[in-house]
Image 1 (tube, rainbow over the protein chains, first blue to last red):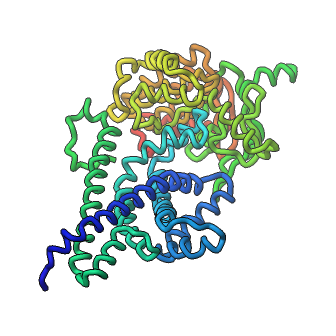
Image 2: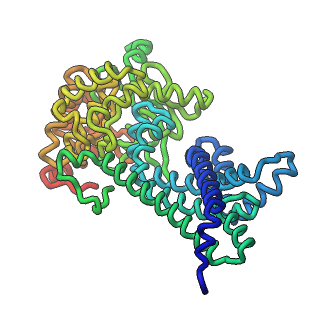
Image 3: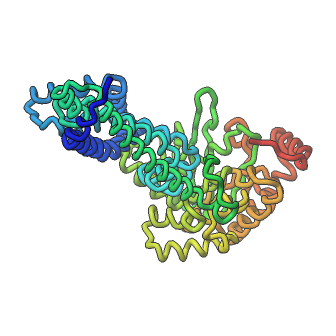
Length: 236
Length: 269
């Protein structure tokens, strides 16, 4: 099979437009799903049973059903209830709902991983549950949850390809169009595969730096006592 | 003694406290009153309910029945007729006045020594940073950690961590301190530093309830020693009386056992 390099140059603007759309959608979804995931995680440990039931149901529904079904529900069902949103917005909302369910579970795991005595000692000073979370528990979960948060972010980037099924003109949609015009599927899809890869590799690199920064800050006591630790040595 | 003055004197009043866990009764109808300025040491075999009793005093472990009052005000009660938001608010307010020190220190590893002491003052007592830092430095000086203020908890010894935990409590100007086996997790050579700080506090008139295995310490600081077994208070009285000539067989047996094992290394987790 010959590779037609002209496709890369001729259709690059179109593909980069899709790439840009993918970035915007993913960034939008992450901005929405981080705080919402935190709310869900805290909701699961609420005193109020109603709050616990609602948040747990939300998480379980979005974790245990196919993303493409969720997207169809948002896109085809919402208009029946008079809610007409542009496809891109539906895509952001759907991706955010899906992402927040996973983020919530990661955050919850992080909270559970912090020793119980930490919460007790915070509450014993008179802090409310929220203040204890805000000042004592959540800062300690950050280095614990970052690697899993990275994984979830990478998977959100990949899942965003599903949004091509509801006419969002993101990267995969752009490739489908290029393929339709040129009948050269290999060139079109290899190109966007590389673009997804580059995007995720960039995100992973940034997150790895962040992980190092966070774990060295939370263990910066090492700087004064023990000689700067080998970054490969995992701190707990 | 008149009833009215008695309730006034009793600064902390725990009445009819019951608590069961999944398959065991930890406390069966325990009442304990502590007047202002008194140092009470609770002793007893492990599993006797002494830590649970201490933890119900600030409602960290909510009791199944009974009530706790501090200075006449309700800390926690079961049943409690107040709305949940009133309960939560008054409990947090009471806890801000009750300092608690844990066996496992529970200092906050993501904050340096100074911040550990500053944080609750700013977050709970709503003090400004200037005042909070001034108070923190005074508290750290009191426990002998003023030169460690920039250190991180993980670089402190166990004894220093525990003294930091005490400083964190002291900076909040507590009216009552609860100490749950404060020296049990320490290496033997670090125990004395912590005990010296506590003794100093006792001499300054701090009201304290201390769960401890250190009978010598109890004898030297306690105004009253409470012996618990099987979720009940078996015997209480001044340390010189009840530690020398216990009137119950059970306390006698407990003291004999401790005397035999007193100099063996402790291997409690």
